[in-house]
Length: 376
Ligand SMILES: NC(=O)c1ccc[n+]([C@@H]2O[C@H](COP(=O)([O-])OP(=O)(O)OC[C@H]3O[C@@H](n4cnc5c(N)ncnc54)[C@H](O)[C@@H]3O)[C@@H](O)[C@H]2O)c1
Image 1 (tube, rainbow, N blue to C red):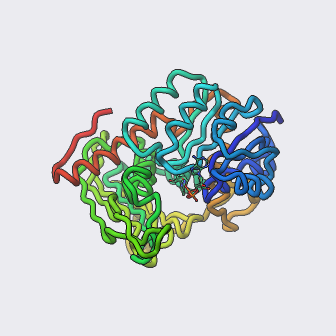
Image 2 (image 1 turned 30 degrees about the vertical axis):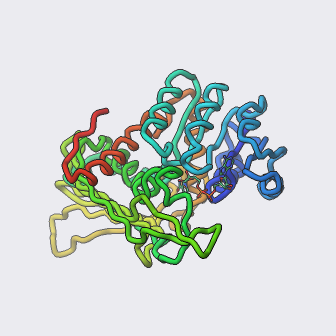
Image 3 (image 1 turned 90 degrees about the horizontal axis):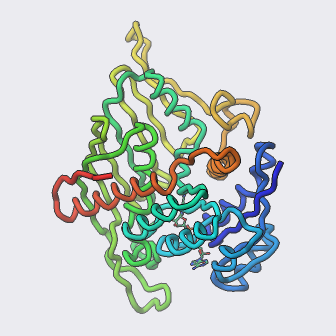
């Protein structure tokens, strides 16, 4: 096993998830590159120091430039708010580092374009954190679709609903600002939906008509409870979509849907069957294929197991189940394999830009209330 030095920038939900993946991947997979936790960065020196201790990094800093310039670091995780991704990722690429950047790519199309351009001028690997495409049972679903088990794909339908912001009394955060986050539910969670759409259909969305709405347009200012701050990006977003390969469907997302904890659900309909998935039951898919005897047909449940890519590295038996963090470890392993064998990643910054174009088109078409064609 060859070591690879890693640095993590931002230590909230995702910075912790990336760090856990770096700590675990060599133990789980036992081959290839072994990540070495070199340096971690967060905004305050105290927080950075505490996170270095908690997560097991050798060094810490409150300046992301220290991570980018660190000669021992070969692979950098960008786990900061969206409006910082572009500057950090481009600087890291210029220093020849591989970059694992959280989704969405950035907070503006211009910045995402610059990131994709910067990635084309290097030998570095890039990947955007669209982890829901890295779940072994979802990878298996793609294989089933590609084998033609459900016939020709006729429809793709996917929603991602959460109740993170359903309570109107929850304070304002960077996610509710166009400047800091870009779009709202669109960039935050519809982006995942679009990644799944492109992944499962092996085709890109080429036409959209979108719809957006803001349910709570003012939130308490977290710095002063007496004041409110404006929410200027979408709480809910939906779109009808057409794909380059002729498939039609619809997609949607909401951050204000009570009771939906990780309500990511998708269905792929085909001329001979249907596959369904629900992220709150992330170890199973439901498959329907037409039977000779219609009196006994129905959906059957396929549980995650050692027949599915990556699963057997965690567990020897089916049905025991993987979790969100395990899927993040799978995502990392795919990236490490690409670095080691000089193979393409998915979704690279170029693939990520295609996802951003759909997000932007949904937003513009919702504002103009018109169908929009997407140029890649
Ligand atoms: N892939 C997924 O499923 C998933 C899930 C959640 C979040 N995300 C993405 O991950 C990113 C981070 O989200 P999060 O939920 O971890 O946010 P968070 O608010 O929990 O954490 C962000 C961290 O970045 C730090 N930070 C902010 N600016 C910084 C800077 N300039 N330099 C260093 N540190 C800085 C903050 O102090 C904080 O610790 C976002 O882009 C988000 O969209 C992805």
